[in-house]
Amino acid sequence: MHILIIGGGGVVGQKLAHSLAKRCELRGQAISKITLADIADPAMVDAPFEVACVACDISQPDSVEAILGADIDVIYHLAAIVSAHAEEDFDAGLSINLMGTLNLLRGVSKLQTKPVVVFTSSIAVYGGEVPDPILDHTFLNPQTSYGAQKAMGELLINDFSRKGYIDGRSFRLPTISVRPGKPNRAASSFMSSILREPLNGQEAICPVSDDFPHYYLSLRKCVENLILGAEIDASDLGLNRCMMMPGKMWTIRQMIDAMTAVAGPGPAKLIRFEEQAAIQEIVKGWRYDLRPEKSLKLGLSADESFRDNIRYYLEDDKPVV
Ligand SMILES: NC(=O)c1ccc[n+]([C@@H]2O[C@H](COP(=O)([O-])OP(=O)(O)OC[C@H]3O[C@@H](n4cnc5c(N)ncnc54)[C@H](O)[C@@H]3O)[C@@H](O)[C@H]2O)c1
View 1 (cartoon, rainbow, N blue to C red):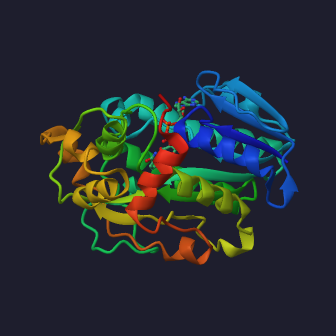
View 2: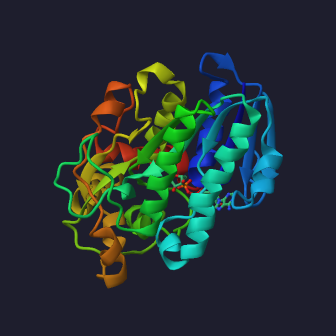
């Protein structure tokens, strides 16, 4: 089994590769090779099988086709520019998030090998004048370019699957918190930095009030779900291969209280509340009351409590000083 992870240098891609390297099998077959592809060579991952790290720009059809081969069984398509970035640079969002996905799927269709393709969409596909709660059959009404580009990617996943070119599946990821690493250009970046920085002894600014609710998942659970997502039998997916990934709704206050319960009272004292209009403008359109019944039935799951999200960050990702 050869697995290609595009966006393999990113936070989810690296964690997924480490998890697969420990697991050594997917879809009942031993993994013989993982290829990590990203705009710049991704960091190497230790594994008991071959790991290749390659540079690839998905906005360029030739660059994508150069990394595709008939021996690839499963492709994780995680490459994207995130919400605030795609909002600031409309052209880059179109070339990478939309055309990059199309370039990949067209390249794969030429192989005629029908690999499993797992696409990471986002709950940013929801929004606007749509009643709560968000159910499996709720229509997509994105209120950002990023959300629109992910929604278009989902249609492509469904259509290329219907044509028999791929065995696609797409999961609308909740916001990952606590996301390790540095702040990124997602409007949701603060939803991790208000916890991650204090847990690392640094100050952080919260740009929304503490009753702000949102829909979250830990990185550990997200990776478990992406692995399960690749293993679902195509016949169980039905006529829509795109679904929510389970998460849970928490307010900023509940998240901070969970951090205090796990790590003591010190970190919460490092958070300063400073409302920021530009961030609020984007995040206020996002939805938090989601009911992911289809993916729950298929075996995917959410964290039990936000204390788990904090614990997983401390166990898996907190830098050792
Ligand atoms: N982390 C979250 O909270 C979250 C929530 C919803 C959806 N998602 C989606 O999940 C996926 C993974 O998220 P992440 O948190 O690991 O993001 P990330 O930014 O860490 O990783 C994305 C990777 O894509 C790469 N990339 C960007 N442009 C590229 C190009 N032209 N060619 C090749 N690679 C390119 C980046 O270099 C980066 O390494 C993304 O598609 C993202 O939109 C993430």
